[in-house]
Length: 370
Image 1 (cartoon, rainbow, N blue to C red):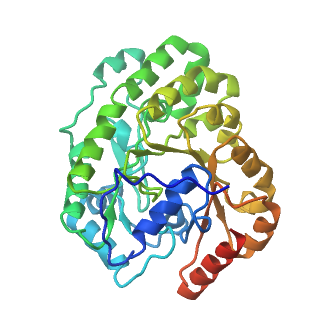
Image 2 (cartoon, rainbow, N blue to C red):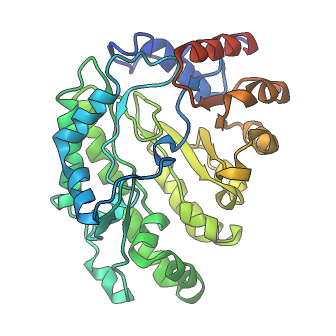
């Protein structure tokens, strides 16, 4: 069946020196959301969490790391230096990520973050249920303003060179977990379900206001919607997730998580759900039941969880449910994976490669598969 033409009426020109085939890449991505193929399956030459798989050789205090994370211009300059002279092939995009850690959303309400080299973490601030009254969104707070500074600094320098995204946003249960602590929130679902739901609802209530605020900054600079996952959209792109759900049963997911998820994704143009390992995957049937989710990012655990062939049944299940999927694999696994799949439709491959000849060879192989 010939794929339907991609509606580009809402698109605007994006010119990047390092990405001359931007429009063609976007055509493939929009077709991928619909489980269609333009000429080949999309592929990105960066593996998931590649930046986190590095042991630190630097010994700094949390205060020193925080100063480095918060030093706006040096961070933007370091990113610019890292992409200097590169050409980004296939569906790999140069993007500055204004990242201050996975719990930044919780920090918008008063949580304090401790910083290391590659991530940050929060400390519980809701010690008893009366503390919920103190949880107020502060769009003038230090963390919120620092995200704005990072975005605007990059946006004012990026023209023709790279894209800029919005920060990682974890509303709902992940935010409630940051405020309450993971073990305590697990107990709360059993012991205090009414209060737990109230806390989770507080952690979601401002989400669309926050998302739209950052989205408006991007759109003011004619920037596509984009976040850490590195997939642009000319509409609103969102990566819903609930890493906390790895610790709860499907029954609790249906009661506490699913109602938030259904509200979270409604206004978005594209939603790609971040399924972080086996624990989250136990809720896959509920996640796949949400019509607004177009794709799944499947993240297998390090070590024994990495070889991709063991996950072919899960991948086929996602595709059979009418959802597209991101598959993270090694170049050495590519042929076996292609042989195991019925079609490239709905598959977005992430293959770590810094070698241009290798990247071009992978692209040629995918063209033959398609």
